[in-house]
Image (cartoon, rainbow, N blue to C red):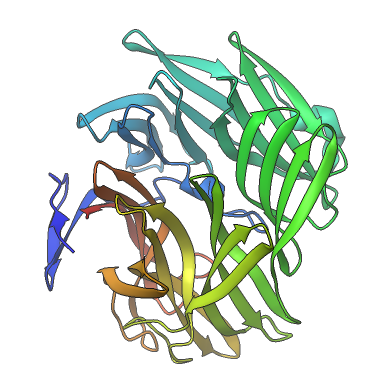
Length: 425
């Protein structure tokens, strides 16, 4: 495997024969996302996108101090990776930095659209000529559902086959889920709610939309990973992976369509009654005329583990197919340990796997090492996403560094965040 270097904004380091560059480094705040309990991770990967014309881009946020009284300024940037053009989209000075979710999509003409959501506000930025236009979505879920709204955020953004943009919302109201689409047509937004969603729907992993009457979901149930197609007002659901008792099946699933065949990479985790991990594995599923066929392709981590051992891997998988039509998956290992009777874990040590014939081979793409049982900086690579363009795979991830022994719930004394960009073939 050869790696091609990118001109970095910040420093790089060398580990074995892999050189890693950081686009953004040592940010005090997470530059891309914030965490919401019970929400799946597709929204956490919306910060990077590929245009139909082959351009790559990312959207991120920086935070800087203005004075010693605690006032700060945050700025949202769009970075065209292909042309290395960086543009400031939006900035604001405040004493309290809001939790924010950022998404990027290119339309069929190759024009970028940026979506920002925070505190139940949703803003759309699009470029007209050389200027960015701000478009506030007229959507107020608390007016629709009242004060019982527990959470609401942009889950995914896609362009349908009718060349209209669709923003997918997953809203929790009094602990009940609602699925809604906002359709963008002729510079106007219309909101539609999908009625009678599957009762066990708790996470949405991927969405494919032809129009509002024909779309597909990959979603997570209580212990199952489900594939659902909505057409002509009815749901057709299929079980992709069904976990056994105390197994969380389909965790962080990613779906990919190649030559009209569907493939899913996902994670299965077994837990005990207290929620502690027993194992974590990487699954590969294929859809055929007989249904879904699933196999475990990796069971152990490589050089990244906690006191609980190496039986933890397969986190945050992403699929791509190369020029030789081989299936590829990037994924993280998991370091798990117990401290004071509490199970904690973190994800990192990005690996790249390729299927050769009927077997899978993997190597470490971005190594992260450490002695996880000691109080020292811990490294994670969050939200990995990959695109395959002209014979090269372009991979992005957000590295989090935390000082202490716990990172699962934010950790002790966060030391900073970086955006990592790797190109390999």
